[in-house]
Image 1: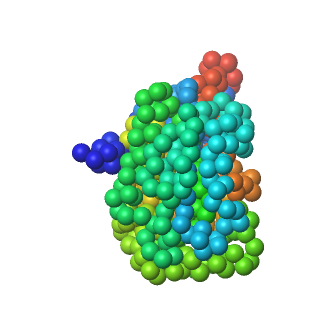
Image 2: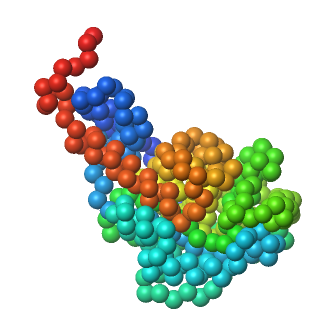
Image 3: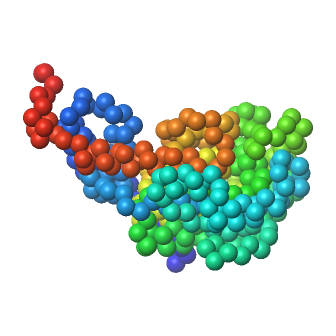
Length: 351
């Protein structure tokens, strides 16, 4: 049995009984019902995921998937492709923004090379390289269908390994120069809005590069004709290696009933692919933030997800997920540590 089939077989819906018990517990705590808003919603959702009304988070992990993109040949990025391996080494040496925020959240980082164009060597790097970057989507498919399956399965393998080591909260992160271009192309397959409303400036490109980016995506869609009914095919035709690995990470986590905090635009492109492969995995996703990329909020709405943070961020790496870890963990502490009205001797609401 293929890893994808094995993962899909393990994905089930949320446990309604545990969610009901969690809601009753929250309503018994010393506060007006529902007054902690999203924190209470998170506590109930986590109960449904974990099949227990009061869950404790012990091991938080952000998995950063790295891959390169042939479409950079079209001039769509403000940065050269060699930044991808340079940033991989920066992650591994602890100097990137995600390292700072992961330390702040008390989370581990696992960096995975699923498709960088360069050879990167480091004792802490997880190597799952499928190919040395995608092909140029403006001239043909990003990868073969077999390669798309392999990067999804790489994500499943990595997340299962981390869960076996004890991870009980996963965050998605990524690195890959040019990766907002395939992410926008994936969104365009599933959105009926004009492309101009979906495509943003990525790393901060000017008008000239933005026009090149729009033209590249239009050509990619025209040449490859991705079928929205075939999400693996969409990934193969206009996606990215790290995007596929993120999709696999989400499917793998859902199959083990572990919540996944989704980061920004590129991570959400992976989440969108995962959600189209198996819609039930969306129940296991927690949206961290909404980025400045115009398509990000549209992606989230396509899956019915509400972001917790509005911080005008557009970095990626898993930075939004790291910030949201604190909120997710706070939700678990509220339901476990707050006193009930009876415990505290506080009078209840007047009927």
